[in-house]
Length: 603
Ligand SMILES: *[C@@H]1O[C@H](CO)[C@@H](O)[C@H](O)[C@H]1NC(C)=O
Ligand SMILES: *[C@@H]1O[C@H](CO)[C@@H](O)[C@H](O)[C@H]1NC(C)=O
Ligand SMILES: *[C@@H]1O[C@H](CO)[C@@H](O)[C@H](O)[C@H]1NC(C)=O
Ligand SMILES: *[C@@H]1O[C@H](CO)[C@@H](O)[C@H](O)[C@H]1NC(C)=O
Ligand SMILES: CC(=O)N[C@H]1CO[C@H](CO)[C@@H](O)[C@@H]1O
Image (cartoon, rainbow, N blue to C red):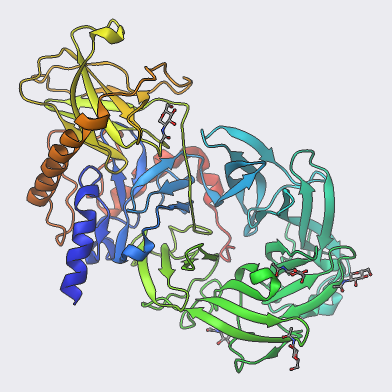
């Protein structure tokens, strides 16, 4: 049974595994940290570094054509930034934005946007920054700050049905802390949220926890904070905001271990679920209300249910308590709550911060484990379908993604593809392009850029982030370029025309120009229809044979690149000892080092 499963997985990955060397399958070497805490995928045509994943479980039921959206960060992530991965675990897009959070997709005015937070995340376990909205060509269209000159916090950016945005803010605010043994003139980080109009920035609603909560309502005590403006007490720790059809809000307070339902016109508390002032009768013997330090609370099923990530432990507090995804039925009339489903990882995870729960359209449930570099896709009933690591299980909290989501996505970058040619192989990639189905090589005798002088050489189906295309031994062209073809065989992009000399000891790399717009290419139906099937079949057979010969999937994947040299000196350095690794990473991170001073009780 197990073997059958493995064979199926092997077959699934056979083609896609070829160009990119990952993902790994049930690799203990990976989880023991033998490829480093942050195993990466490196490429020949691009200096971009992608994550290498380890699939502990895999099922066709997770193959829904959706993309996975993560923002890996932490001191061990060499090139942090938002990342899109395809359903086989290959990188689709990333840009080194730095430590970013909460990568999501929202449809706004008929267009899909990537949304994520960027800023200084070293401010007391939350952040001061802004949200960015990138369109399908990865251009920054909106940069969103909070209203009233407040900095946007990293924990929430949620768009409502009406096209307004909900964001969280941690505002330094004076407070009388005598009820909790503090000063009369003490200081707090006030848990604040706003709803505003994205287009105009007009503030529609603002709410502050200190106006509605007593300081004695929360679970976390002051822990030495609150005596000065430079060291406020984060008493509430707001970390999610949702809005229902009635116009009221659902917020999550990590430090009160409760969810609160808030009147959308007055801001008054309507009810609280969990924590010290729970208003619900728990029909599941406590299992529906004993959540703690939770994240990402969302109304579901038109307000009759709630999902959340129940961390169960905080900042190393109780590592024996296991985090779970939680799907609750709530009856707001009779004030009862019961567990509909729980989502438990097969190898118990105690995530000390962050995390998310997403209900997918096919009714699967995606749980992101926040502080732990894992995401798991469950059936609605809680059976594990796919269990994926994006950092070594032996790691120590240096790789995390605040939340993890899956969405459909179409990316048409404004850059053009990248190419590298060495001996009789071409490597080609196009950061962010989702519509490429086939790569076609063209040869030319000069680089005069006259398209009439280029001739078709060969073609390969796109596989992974980077596709390797063998050049036929009888080719005699002096110049080579690769054309990107979409599913209807039309050319949607072209690399530079690069010099090809199979006897050259150096690879030739043709990188796109960072500032360029789409390069002009012939917009005609290429050879692909008809002729293409023959090419694709031959290519597929070649690809399958090549993979089978060279890559025994059960063994730890070696990162041997033959005579190819990595473009970036960090690339392919997975064999460095731990000590050497530190130096490389920190010199690369350089400027962003200051923002890596995490609060010990982060998020
Ligand atoms: C919210 O407050 C308004 C104004 O006081 C009140 O009319 C309404 O019933 C409240 N809504 C809920 C759900 O309590
Ligand atoms: C959703 O809930 C609202 C308010 O409770 C109700 O008016 C509406 O009919 C519900 N919609 C659906 C589709 O059930
Ligand atoms: C509340 O309880 C009553 C009595 O058990 C029941 O008839 C009613 O349907 C319940 N309300 C909801 C919203 O389920
Ligand atoms: C392929 O690209 C062409 C040219 O951009 C476009 O007109 C066509 O709609 C694309 N085909 C698909 C299936 O997207
Ligand atoms: C599921 C789980 O482990 N729940 C725990 C959440 O935290 C509270 C308080 O620490 C525990 O009592 C629960 O057992």
